[in-house]
Image (cartoon, rainbow, N blue to C red; front, side):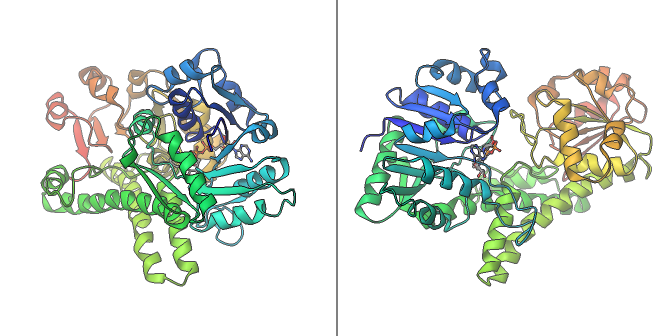
Length: 463
Ligand code: NAI
């Protein structure tokens, strides 16, 4: 079956970029991205594509090319479902904040709502694609809901997890390491898989399109994120040991990374990983393992999260102890708030937790991030519910100029590895700070020798 019309439910960091690239590469397919969030859809439809709600290098150009041709953003979910041959579900699957599995399991209420809406609206056969990251065996729950519509419509469920990384989403989508498609082993299941393979084959080489059964596909996404996060926690664990022993974590990373069995990627020590996925997906994996009574498996993976929390906390503690055991009333400048460079996404960013710890010690934090707005920063802090909104507002100032953020500060903390930070006039920044002027480089971004020559007291991670 050749797909002519696609609907994607969820216009977020995955749905938006993924569908924009499919639309660009498949001009013969109509792609409609729908969301309940009217503000988000309005932003996707903004005449100026620089105002689209997801910042990713190269994305606004692709949206400009395809939008209005075969790419549409809309809040009319029912209409888009009814029209589509293939429906991607790309809604959020956050960690549950209530009830059984609170703080661990994935909250599948948005997924179930989508399945019920598809079941209610569909009048023709549909292929339903899980794009969201889901616990293994979710497809059977979706199928259960869809198979009880009683209106004779046939559904095929595929799992097609997304492996893009924020900050490089467009490049990852244009040239993915692999595309993974899981489906039923029946003839109908295989036909559905082929329909999705045919879409990707418009730009992805065939040998990079893997097909598996549904459960392998669902579990592969959780496994990939667990392995990636584990590498970060592993190198971060070594960073603390490096600091005690005189070893340098950058040198250690280079030395082990040249071993082809280990590989050099994802070995950068930092203040800790953030983002909406790693923590959520590992907690979910831990929960699933526990639910099968696999306690050793669960404990093994949980340690990745424990290490990451420790890394964020010890970064804040080190700032406090270095600043003579008190930051009360002291101005500390944060360069960066996003969880990594080249994205405006702040979910689970290490900056939030470091700021929270410093605010508890009554620091005055002044933040500059090239892509994150003040409202978002306050929202992130309020979300932790550590203190009242008014107190967060009192403790945080958000600046649009990095030099102003650093003016009169006791210390600067680098929380995101934005390239522009490297090119600042550090002499000018130094001249306008209190002395001794400290830099805590949570991303090992700046050049130690240059900063020390200017006069900074410079501390990085793992050396
Ligand atoms: P997001 O929160 O940016 O976007 C989800 C969107 O779905 C929101 O705009 C929300 O309003 C909408 N939505 C929720 N329920 C809806 C409903 N019933 N009808 C219509 N719209 C609805 O989330 P994001 O980051 O795009 O993630 C989506 C999924 O993709 C998650 O499962 C995530 O784990 C996974 N993923 C995320 C990656 C990332 O880098 N952000 C990478 C790979 C996978």
